[in-house]
Length: 226
Image (cartoon, rainbow, N blue to C red; front, side):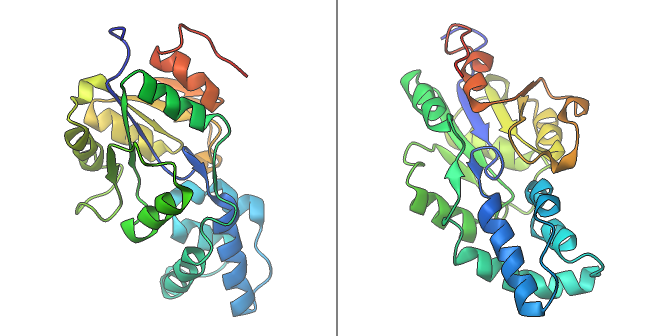
């Protein structure tokens, strides 16, 4: 293992490890149908998936105020929970990345603002998280990203120092979290990105595909395969 190679890699979940947008958008569509509202702008909703349920509902139900969104959020989450792995999949190439991490003895984990009552069943149904060393969800601690505490907690669970870790995410908050924790941070340019330009976020590197991760982590001899 080279000096630049991390001992642990932590991933955001939605928009980084898995493409969950289709099932989240379907839940927004279902809620709009129940409310008698027009069908949502799917592209607008997709762009803000990483920003959470409230942001998605604001895009799907333009004109709704915060009180209305808070009222409808539980029903949206119920609709999503019932179908959250119908179309959700690991991004292409991510299975190979996780296999490479295992082969090189590098721990990996997940740090997400998604609540545990949604994240844990999702991972169990998708059956790819057997080797996951640390799972820190949005309700594990009193604070969430961009506070560094969840990421530092993941380091504790994986028994690695922050200085020897990498965090990969697709939202500005992920970069802010990495900076605050003193962890090298990579942007998943294949993710949702909140409609922003990730090159302005100040990450250590922006990657366009999961297959670029091994090279960025120093575990493939500098090769990127497409």
